[in-house]
Structures are given as C-alpha cells and as structure tokens.
Image (cartoon, rainbow, N blue to C red):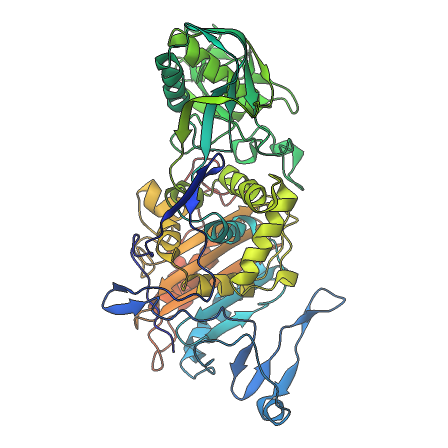
Length: 598
C-alpha cells in the first residue's frame, strides 16, 4: 500500500531554474516518472519518499485479472476475464510493475455502489452515456465503475490532461517571455530603423504590462522610431482557432483566437478579448461605448439607444464572424449602471501592437506606423517582461477553466519539444507525457488542449489513472491546489465550483475540474471520504436530455465525501439530491466562468 494524502500548495519538491531563453524560464526538466525524490511531510505522513511506477489499466478483483477493454463495432466494450491462476501457471508477467500490490474489491463498497446506482438511475440519463469511475489511490481498488473505458467527450476535463502534461514538459517554473528588440543603429534618441515586439504566447499580458515595456524603451533613451513598430508572433504558427471549434462561437471570449502576442483586458486573463463598457445617456440618444483598453482592433457600430428609466434592457454586443465590426444593439434603460461585455478580436497580434504603440506614445516615444515582421538574429533587447510561473498560472487556468491558457500551453509544449508551436506538435507532446504518467496513448483522442472541441475523446478510467498517478509527481501540490474547490465562495479558490455543493460534506473537500459543452458535462477530481481515505473520481455524462445534470455529479461527489467504510448503510441519495441544484450555466451548456455566472 502506498502512502497517499492531499498536499498543501508549496509541498512540491524544490526545483532549480534552468537556462533562461526566449521561450520562457523553466526548471531543469521534469523529474523522470520513476526517479528518486526527496521527502516532504504533510499531516504527519510521508510523501514522495519512494515514488511508484505509474499505474496501468490492469486491475485485480476477487481472483480475476481484467485486461483493458477493446471497443466493439457498436462503440461499446467487451471484457476479457482470465484466471489469475492460469496466468501464473503460464509464467505471465504483468508490467510495468507498480510499487504496491493491486487490491481486490471489498464488501465495504456495496452500500456505496447501491447509492451511486440509484443516483445514475435518474430519468434524465435514460438515453445518455454515463461514465463513472471511483478509485482508492492507496489500495488501487476500484470502488465503482460504469462505462469506465468507453471514450466520451470530456469537455473542459481535457484541461486535466493538458495541465499535467505541461507540468511534466515545461515544468512548474516555466515563464512566458515578451521582448522589445531592435537591430537598427541609434543616433542619439533616434532609432534609425524598425522596433520589434516579440511574444511567446503569454496569455497574462495586461495593458499595464505593455505600458511597462514602453517605459523601459523610453528609459533606454529612444524617443523616435524612424522605422515601424513590427510585431513578431512567429513563436507559434498562424492557426488561430482549434479543430472542431464551432464557427458561431468565434465572437465569444471562451473561443478567443490564439497567438504568440495578445492582450488580456481583465484580471481573469481572458486574452484575445476587448472589454466594452456601455453606459446610458439621455433618453433616445445613442448609448456611450468605451473599450478597455483603448484600441482600434475592433470597429464599433453603435446602434443601441437609451430607453426609459423603467424599461427592460435589450442590449446585445456581437462581433460579426470573420470581421472586426462589433455591433452594439438594443436598448439600455436611462439611469441604469453601465454594462460591461467582452468580445474577441479578430487579430490578437495586431491588437497587441496597437496597445503597445499607444503605450509608447504615452511615454514620449514617437512611432509612425505598425506592421508585422520577424526579429533579426542580431537584434538587441531593449525591454523585457516575464509572466508569472506556470505553477501560479494554473490557478486562473483551472479554477476559471480558461480555454486560451490551455491552447497556448499546448503550442508552447510543441515549440519546446518539437520546435513547432502548433496544435499537432503540442498534442503529440501531451500524448507522450501522459503515457509517462501511466495513460494509454491509444485511448486518447485529442485535437486541442482545452476540450472546447467536441472531437476530443477520453474515458473516465484514463482520467482517474491520471489523477491517481499525478499524486506521485513533485508538482502535485500545485496541481491539486489549482483545482476548483466545492462551496468555496472566493472566485480564485472555488472557481467553477464556488456555488456548488455548499453546506454538504463535499464543501471545502472536493477539488475537481468541471467541464461543460452542449450535450457533455464532466466532473473529475479528488475527495476525502468520511473515513479519512482519499479517493479519485471521474463522472462524465454525454448525450443527456435537456440541461446538464450537474446536480447528479454533485450528488455523487457528496456521497463519496460521506463514504465511511465497511459498516456504512445507504445514505439515501434522494435526500442528498433534494439539497443540490443544477450549476449556474447548466441551461447554456457552457462553463459558468465562460459566461461570468459562477
């Protein structure tokens, strides 16, 4: 039996910083999956002293050995059951070796299984696919499984895969780097050539960060750029939108275009978007619309007017697909509070160039024109900005389910490992890194890093294997802390679970990643049972009727938090369900953080 306990953030191993390069700063490289580690302590228990090999799909139950299921022609799965005795007689060796024996199922799960079966008997799941796995990482016992190995659309649960792979490939201390460079000669305060802005994908670049870059340029003595300000986003390819993304989602912040240069207008780091502030004016007059930051990256077409003070708001903000035209229509009541709306920009690189050019002018640096170009090899660095380390970026990324963060990390992995900042290269790296964490590459079908594409497929079993094996990695404390925490009201603690499972045994206990798309909802993560045992679980529903049945996911998580062991009785899940309501945004089929409704 391995020692297992949830860590506190900061319990991870000390890792030194490696070389500083344009792509960011990282540690000396991920610790190999089976490398020796030092010891840290949490709650009186030793962790990471002798890490085990990643667990595989092989599970032993009551004297039989179950091999991985293979999909059949109907998309289901068939089981092969082989007697352990026969395998021993044949001299069969199971590999890779785990550091602890795989336990058999016990009678203690009977009440738990019965209650979970009752929850999943809800009529909303009658024609749906419901995949559920519950594992005890200390014993490797599978306490419950249903349609465990069938591939399904994970929605934002795909971010569990991307974040774990990024921690392995890039390292917890990886930083994105943005530089201002020039190769032209200087004549006093005049730069006799072009000035370059070069990015590596930092999704946290706020307008204030570009302002500080401009301040550094001014401090270097440059006052006039005789050439142009050129943006260099070639660290990534020029493919802006992911495979399978719905074109109709293009104007919305959760589907913002991906670039190595971008701007995040808010504290949620919704990169590639601009914030519109719409204010009422006198009745009958056009509303007032301001952008934050100020930019020409979008063209405003203000058609909305100010209505009577007690009239309903019918305000709509829409960017035309494939265009920079943003239409503000409808009516806003006189005397009402200003309304803030986010919309994507069509060209995030040009957006960054525009914001930086304005900042340069504000600091007394004259720039006549902007454009795009590649930084010369002999260019000097005039100004530089580094992002927060990956271990800190995980918090807004996972708690707020930020799709853009997932995609820039995917491309950053491709750039680092393959020299190509593209989705295909990044997905290859993710798959390789997940294999090192015990997952089966053949069981993964990923086309993006966020799970926004309905073409992504993974099984609940693979997700629980990841969650289980992640517990043995030196970065686990940061990973665990970055997951949304049930019932915690602080946005950067509770995240997408802040208004779910409150006043239950799961509140402050469940750390899990949510996921929502039209027809797909998921919840996978960690919970400590009432008997003190840590559990990992994954619940994924596809093709259900009506709104997302998130209340059923929550009921399962609460029931796991109430699990007390061998002598427990049924917990009457119907009683639990009456206390749980579907999550905010369930009717929309979107993550609540995407529509700012958490």
